[in-house]
Length: 71
Image (tube, rainbow, N blue to C red; front, side, top):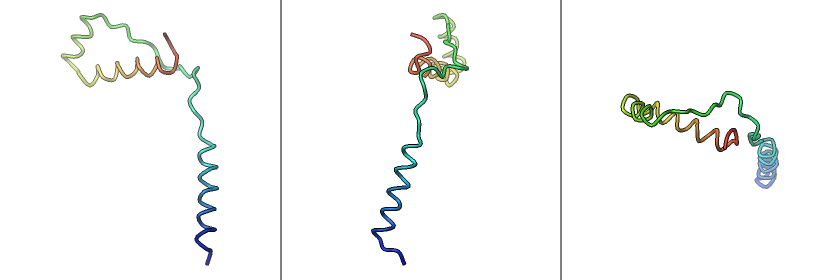
C-alpha cells in the first residue's frame, strides 16, 4: 500500500499539471460581442418589460469591455 507522502506528492504533481494547463481568455476574443446601443427610453422600456433581459444586455456590455472589445 502506498504511503501517504507518496499519494500526497502524486496529487500535488497532478494538480500542478492541471493548473498549468489552464489558459486565460485572450483579449482579442471578441467574436460574437457587439456593444448594445440602447437609447435611454429603450433602456427604461426594457427594464420595465424584462428586467432579466436588461441584466443580460448589461452583462454583455461589461464582458465586452472587460475583454477589450470596445472602449
